[in-house]
Length: 50
Image (cartoon, one colour):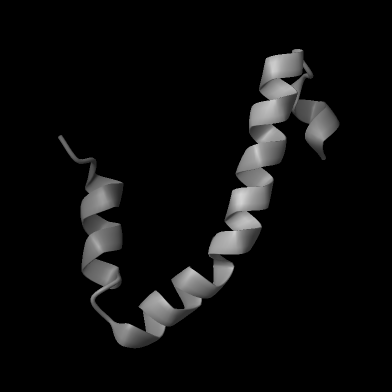
């Protein structure tokens, strides 16, 4: 089941310019998600991620 956000994102990604920018940001998003995952596994409070 998809969320309203997922539906919205898929709709927006039909635009080639938006898709290009979204894909260009993927490496940064991957790094950020990795940092969040590591912090959660170590029990670090979210405030320390700032």
